[in-house]
Image 1 (tube, helix red, strand yellow):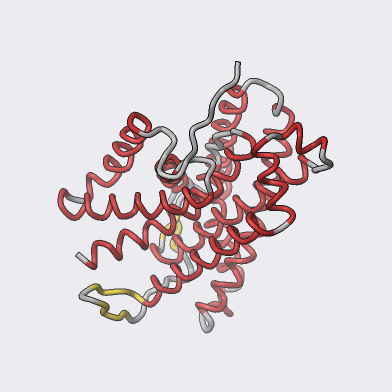
Image 2 (cartoon, rainbow, N blue to C red):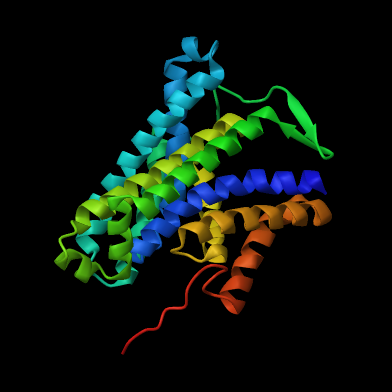
Length: 297
């Protein structure tokens, strides 16, 4: 039982990192950014390119080098997210939401098949593979690499939560989420704050991509599709638009998948995720921590 819970928490930490970007963008722009999962893929490939370029250094300092590459990949993925917002979404901000949704799907395909042209259709083996020793806690076998990755994920989420709740930029993001017109009248630079939200959300997705590549050992140009849908599911379960809800939804989805695959088999993993998405949309569309919004006519 302990092993099942641990496996769920480990996978859930990845879902939570990616789901945070979904919730940030939706909370501020009411946009379902379906290209967000592909930023996870882009982060993994940026990390792959950096590790391949500096393979001589990474061979001796694998964990330290990986953390440096993680930061650089976050910056690269964050800038890519800002570019997508500036080129694809900003010109359509006042257009009907369906236009933005279709643009997000187009951006997703552009990232996927752009990477296919650059890196090729075949899976790539990651230059650094985290493995090594493990410890036993309450009957569960816990890898040291897993502990490091979960520690990094928790540190990123705590930092983001503190920034959103306590910093000036975070207050501006919350103000735009409540009422963008009023926030602009109060002197908030809406374009700059939205660009910051895209940078942060994309950087978190890029970090998750590097962590997944270094742990699972293989990446491909379509790896962002399923994780994007899973992160969207986690955001809905937790309450899309809620930061704490995205983190909780990621953990809950990871645990549900872990228990489901243990009792019924790994082939049912994706079925569980999307079945719970339908269940939550039917029974509690606002999610676990989401708030019901009243539409004024």
